[in-house]
Each structure stands twice: as structure tokens, then as C-alpha cells.
Length: 139
Picture 1 (cartoon, rainbow, N blue to C red):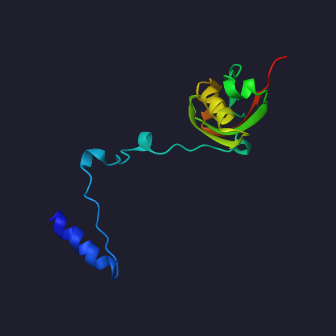
Picture 2: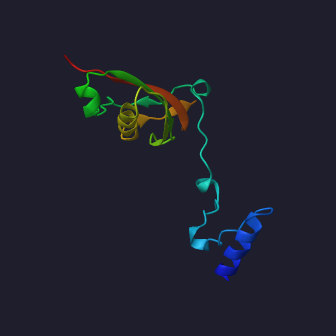
Picture 3: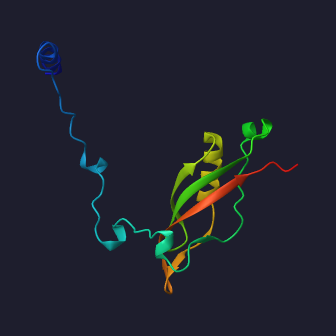
């Protein structure tokens, strides 16, 4: 059968073309459907939509990329961070960086950070926050 399909494709390549549908995936590989509110995609409010923005609970201590340090480069990395209502980091998007090494180091530090969640009224809420991570060589 496969030989017949390949032969048919070769013949049709000279004409209109050939498209062969991929085999269907087993059900176990398919993405699960949300069962209820706990499985729904969380909502993250913008910084201007909350009363108290999410904030780091401690210092952010990124590991300085070795190659960048050897070359004497310093940089700032700006990231947009999604912080869940429990303070956990749900996602990081680097918006400004001078190198992939600085971006990766900043993202790793942010993902390991502890945040106080944003608040709307008295309730903790998921939110977006912008962070600037500074890489400076101590002299």
C-alpha cells in the first residue's frame, strides 16, 4: 500500500501535487479536554488592573553567564512574568536582552523566584509583572 501511495505521489508531482494525511494519533497522545474551572486557562490581570502588583519576596540572584563575564559585558534583561494567585511563576517572556546567555540566566532566576501575588481588593489574583534583571560585574 505504501509503495502504491508513493508511486501515486510521484505521478501526481508532475500534475497537481499530492498530499498524504498523517496517520491519526492514539487517544493517549491527544491533549486533554478541560474538565472544569480548575483545568481552565488561568487569567492574568495587567499591572494597571490590580490594586497591589505582584512583587519579589526576596532578592533575585541570577547566575552571571561565564562567557559574558569573561568578556566584561554587562546588561539589563527585561521580562514579562505571569505570576499565579499563589505566587508561583506560570510563565516568563523575555522582551529585551542583549544576548541569549543573559536572557537564559534571567529566565532561570525568575522561574526559581518567590513572589507575593498581586491583589485586587483583598483577594490574591494572577497577574503580569514586568521585571528588569541587571547583570553587573562587581569591581
